[in-house]
Length: 267
Image (tube, rainbow, N blue to C red; front, side, top):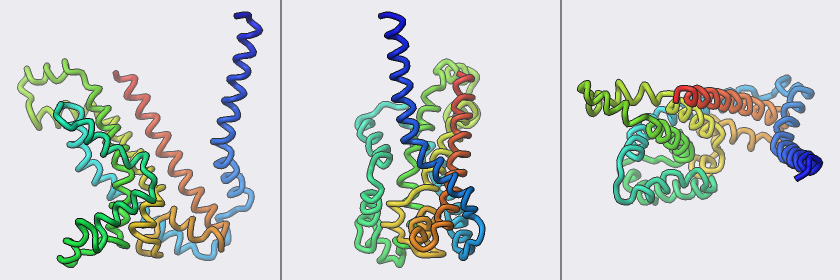
């Protein structure tokens, strides 16, 4: 291959890459520019609604992250450490919500936890109604976002060298003692990274939430649902809310990437 052909191939690769980047980045850049040039944060007629949605999103996503850490950490540890029949099928079902259409996820949650659902009917008999409540918001966000934490935690646990754990066993560390004092301190970056990704995904959840929890202002209306609700009547409020979500997502993604690089340097 001649030097001219190499340059041509390089230019073609860069041209295609630039076009792909433009398709992915242009909408975000345009939104940012519009938000700044129109000063969307000024003159918002219903700032209380935005504050209510922001507070609900913050509270629900924090609850989701805590729930993912409590339930997902043991699950990720089992999947990373033990071999058993049906493991691949279990992993498939755990990661399915990542690629499942959000509307289908919401429908599945409604059929499971709705008043006439497989589990919801039993709860309804006991006087517990989940749909169109804050609990429904948390469940929808958890269902969609928890797989991101579980996957990251599983990778973190799998990356721990067997020699390290063998040396800890020689020193008398077993079971939970090893998990708390050896495994967690080594894998903490992967766990925190997974929590951040899970939080960011929960923050942006829309489809499953609106189908399972509804869009009730002050009760189940999160920030993505607010953008959907006010888009037609108040474009500035929609832009401003969208900008807040983008900034939070950028911060979360930057932290996750920083932790990933730190983890790579440690290994």
